[in-house]
Image (cartoon, rainbow, N blue to C red; front, top):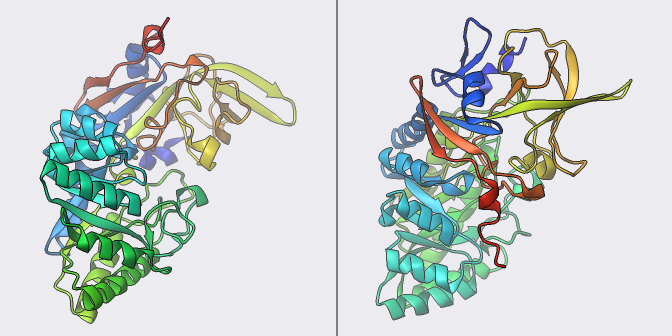
Length: 438
């Protein structure tokens, strides 16, 4: 049976007496029939509980905490509004995400603007809207932001993003805090100190703190402890040599979710323990008044809350080699397996209590041999039209979705207490041609 995978699904997931997967009180098979597939289903209760969990676990251990949702994991107007309702701020990395955040009623002062190559237009937009913080990533940005803030007659609060050269032991393509990274000012080679001096001297910038981010997902707590130690040692040096007043410190995000049965994760409380203790101990050791702690969970907020639903199409059996079951989605809506070799589990939404009698590979419908969602998974006997449910699909699938092969991006529904609300409609053929110019 497939019930061992149920803990990977949203908190409200269960199996009804018909053997159907139910999310937020709604039958997943019925959802697929009503809205079509591929379909992404988000459970509102799980979303809100994850927001509250991060606030509770960190705030109970540290005096001043800001929790920012990292919008790159998935963002649209309804989700931005939900995040704001739960008293989280927002971390954005582009003018587009900034526009969505504002349209979703996120207060501008609660927005932190990240990114390694913000354009002058994006910086102007941020200044005009009054974003709370700009997290500066390079020397060109420091110079441009100071000039643009002067022209706008504002003094912009900034954090300097530092690279502490700490290995987070995650995938090389999602590692961000090592020496060889496009992100941030490297501490080890003196660039971070030069950036600090430049920011201190900038008439139109208010340097309020330091930021660091190691990568994602991080399954261990030790990299956070190490990264905080390196960053705080640097902060102490900047205080002693240049008079830094450290009022904010961010170790970034990178908190994981469980994608597969064989790779469990630590609870939020474990990360909260290590991060808050490391910051408090370093402050005491180095003589700092504890700054405001800023954390940036993204995947950990939306990942478990989202489930992807697909319909089974064709079957190809290669005797003594493999059986391919093709579904109506794939790398167009979830490219993570293709680029990160990301692993997932799945159940048959209408046969959740049936025996797993066959080993198959779930393939997408797109014209790439690498378009495989899950390789070698045991599932019940499948027929065309069966609905496949893939848990832990709420983060980074939809934001990285494409129109490859002129695919239509899927609809997204929010479920709660047996009701559904569509929060993004499925694209149409007309949408695919909307920007064409004859």
